[in-house]
Length: 177
Image (cartoon, rainbow, N blue to C red; front, side, top):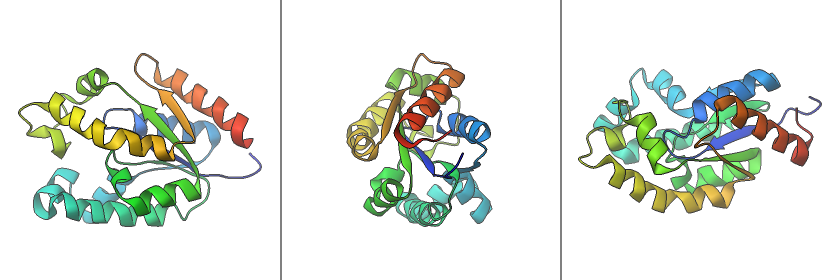
């Protein structure tokens, strides 16, 4: 790869951003980061605990700072948290500093992929996780679409297929790969 560009994955929880991101990074010989994992590393605590202690607002402030710092690097793949697009500053940084890939995933798939995951504070305690995911989608989907350079459906595809699809699209728009 002649030029090391950043690749930023956005999308809802359960879209496969971390799984897909790791594989893209491996194939393109880039460094992989996950903003949620980075927050956990820096705080020494799980995301759910940060949410409990600081609320969503405190978590989002940490997330915005992590995204600001990580997007200053070159040659990385970054899997962002589902709500990272709620910050205009983060959206601007992601758009300006790399190629944004939106992993679009239907609610059914999100539910299937997240139903046993107690580390997702927005749905872990929800009486109706489907309703929460639908509300989040209504609020966030337009923001994902606003900054996406590439949009990929992840619902019925294998991770390998999605990774190859993304890499092909990256090559066609930027000469990556």
